[in-house]
Length: 121
Length: 295
Image (cartoon, rainbow over all chains, first blue to last red; front, side, top):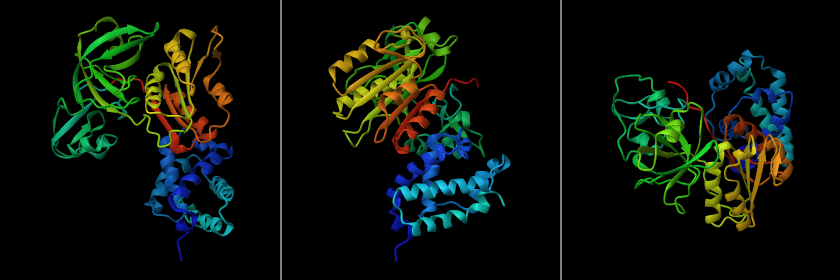
């Protein structure tokens, strides 16, 4: 039985998905203002790391990283609605890339496990 | 110690640890080879323990050189030519730090192509009150000695796919690295379309207008787009914001590789716009010209 990461297509799939996903995020007025001041080059690396994790691939993220990385945003009001919007854009991107619904659900379940850390709860 | 950007980019404050370990923050962004030899950036170094340090030596990325020529390209831009020191290996589009006899250090993009040009060439904006540009304009001349450090930067031509369309966009002297990259791409036999957009406030700021028009008539797949924010301007020059005109001219940028150079605000804006217009995150290369900061 291959892993989710392998079934999705590994690093090449991550690279394809990052572009589509992040383009949706930057075009979504519910959340794009959170990304206004980010450095795009650093963001590219971060998005890739995030997507790799979401795909169940090799990553070094810990719950504390998620917590610390979003702490300053939580202080400014980052909440469930923003988390949901990001997840929605992710699902939309994967559907566009013809990822089967069963795998999309697995990805969303994985991302969901980070919710409390991201939102500092 | 000279320093310029105080952001870990220009590397003009490079020093070497003889004993002790520099903190990771002071070594981030420098070349592996230099890091392994204990080099670090002194402007970002808060030692965590005893550190015995030394100045960088010639050969460790710092080279003695001599000015071979200075001329005006426009009212506000100078071309500076230096004898290329032996051992100074660079790629068109990278930048180097110039250090004069008064230990003023400033980083500039190299505009020349090592395989095509004997000298190192720079296009330098005259900054009012600028320590280096003022010195170059008023005191330096052919024969003046200075040091060159580098090269640094990842903004250069390295396309695996020779047919990939290229977008080169820059404002002001952001044109310098793009001019090098364009000529390097043509030299290496790039066959995909190459679109170079140069933006200036007013027409005199298009300081390479004629050479670029000549390059465009020499190469069918090289396209030069000149743009000024404020008219009047010649017929072939667009008047208006560069970003809007670029997107209008090229439409979708899917499949493009983009090189963006110049003022940080311009680079930041364009990064986002070209990405939204279809350029992959991995295909965006930038060089932000950070202003010098007081220590």
